[in-house]
Length: 588
Ligand SMILES: Nc1nc2c(ncn2[C@@H]2O[C@H](COP(=O)(O)OP(=O)(O)OP(=O)(O)O)[C@@H](O)[C@H]2O)c(=O)[nH]1
Ligand SMILES: [Mg+2]
Ligand SMILES: [Zn+2]
Image (tube, rainbow, N blue to C red):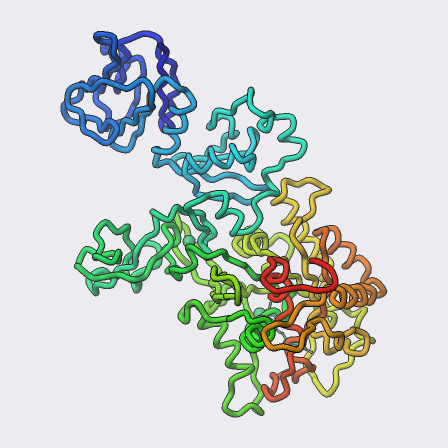
């Protein structure tokens, strides 16, 4: 009977036909068949030997007896040929058995090794070996997908150097078809989908790393445990808990009972319910001064007011601490004692401390975007949904800023609905049409077509550079500051219908008409912009929105004058697309 022995790091992949089979640190005199040059391994570590018709694992090391299938074996143990065996020698995991596939799966599963898998210009991970294999089996990764091990991060390998592909299978892994349609790169698109693929794992909304639920850290509470290597000196240390109270709360090394949990990679605190609810991501892409921050404030405020009343969807803050920035935005515009004083939301800059924070990841200072979290619950669906909202700076979307803004790009790609915000007041060709009312605010001219093309290029890189690649999820092309074009845009159309509270519906027919008329206007004046939009996604909706409902003063806006127009629509649209808000007159 042939046995196989596999280790992922260092890489061992041998067929054993002759016994005894020796493994140790040195070649030569000890006649080791496999040499592992690692200080934890003894000169002669172990052997696999045949005795009396059975195969035995025999330990030779006095100082480092291995742990075979969870049991420390000082002498020898008979092996069962019908299943793979897992041997732990310090950090090194070696598997052996008679079924090659079982052995390689076990090797991946028990390995502590983590991988990053390329997806266009981005990477997902870290993933365990088992997750990588699962991704291959489901067709998300192909033979040619690049993968690198975090133990050896400088070297990328083709997937088929790491995973054994079954050529007799259904043909899904053959190189030719992989390079033609590259199903992998365009498949995983939303955090939710990724979660479905990766099973008991979640994607961190801060660093976008996929981690196993069992690796989630706890945030210590004892005053003696202040100082964390990733977050800095002022923060409570994060730790992998091993002691728990009767009701499952972690206990820190000084006996404190910890309720907060944190991401294994970036150590940011995570709202607990985020781990087991689907995430719906909203991030707005647009030029500097296009109105993104003001829109987010207005949109979240409107969602609080209207989602429950019209659609029976409850909308609540999930994490008051994380939501400080969005609450501060909202309060500025909608919650002032004196609503006649001018208020202004600061321009978001690339390193704005309210919406980003720097942490120490793998020795580098990395800027993480800080989201706000909401929990949405519909009337007849008991499973809540988390809405994760990001603000970013217009400068993030400048051509070439992709590396600084990779987190922002990832958020964009992980959104359920892409949301681009076009500012007509930043395009000189629209200037003669603008009705500024009495307001004095104005934006400077910016090439939004270039910005849109940059967004398209980033998406392409993600989808594997295929020239025909288009996103399968919808693109909402928002025309911001629509109040400035109130004479040219259909802002009074009844997109919501209903007469009973909580039972309103989204009228898809009317929304299509709004989109058509808005697109017609854009086409007339900036045709390259609509063309690029259609180039990015196959399903584009042109939607006018106005966060303020009027043109404010250059120095700010008076809260009493704010009358938002359709700012909740992107959220309503995404919920309707998910089937959580009913639609009439067509489908999304
Ligand atoms: N007419 C009109 N002006 C608006 C509206 N919303 C925002 N503005 C104006 O646009 C300005 C910029 O808005 P912000 O939300 O700060 O823009 P931003 O996209 O966040 O800009 P960056 O943070 O620089 O990327 C505001 O100060 C207002 O003067 C609107 O609904 N109508
Ligand atoms: Mg801003
Ligand atoms: Zn994280």
